[in-house]
Length: 223
View 1 (cartoon, helix red, strand yellow):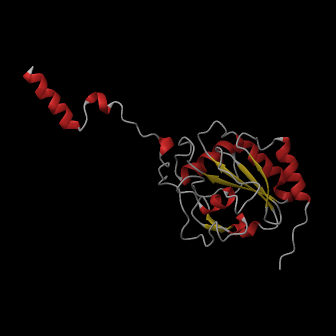
View 2 (cartoon, one colour; view 1 turned 30 degrees about the vertical axis):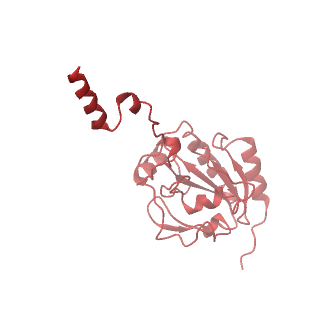
View 3 (cartoon, one colour; view 1 turned 90 degrees about the horizontal axis):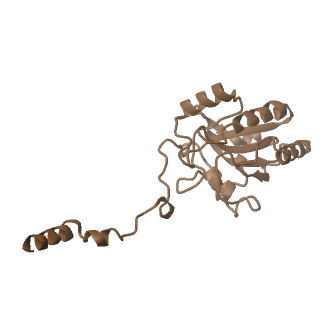
């Protein structure tokens, strides 16, 4: 009996709680903690001059392209622009093919598709920018502009996606990104005119109709 008492004291003091009490302690889950920042996602802090609070359009931002060069999105003003967060290891990854088909069909009329790799959903974009570029170009023949990997939600969310998902800056189309391949359509005037869920395919009739209607609008005169 004395030996059992000694063992009980050792167990209690050694771990701070008896085994039966420790088993009842709540276990931390990912749902109760913010997701860890992705070290391979870039914040573009050297190149972004706009914040979500000061931008008036998603085309006000300067982003790094997938090769690390700064690109002012203002160069797309007067065109119809689709923003898409993409991933290489997702069940929706075949949407790359449909996005490329949209690019081929409508780019001459003024459509620009911009791809933003993001690793926010189940780690489905784990690669480097070089690996992502190799994958989408060789597997799907992607030729539309691709940008450096960023975060589209969570504590390290990029300022561009803070703007796109905030009710303050983007009323009517705000809300968290639901999954890989969520789509925002920006008209020739630089305003968001439509949003489509991740599961809405790029060649869905609703998407095609929105693109074609937006392309009909005359490009605004630049001052």
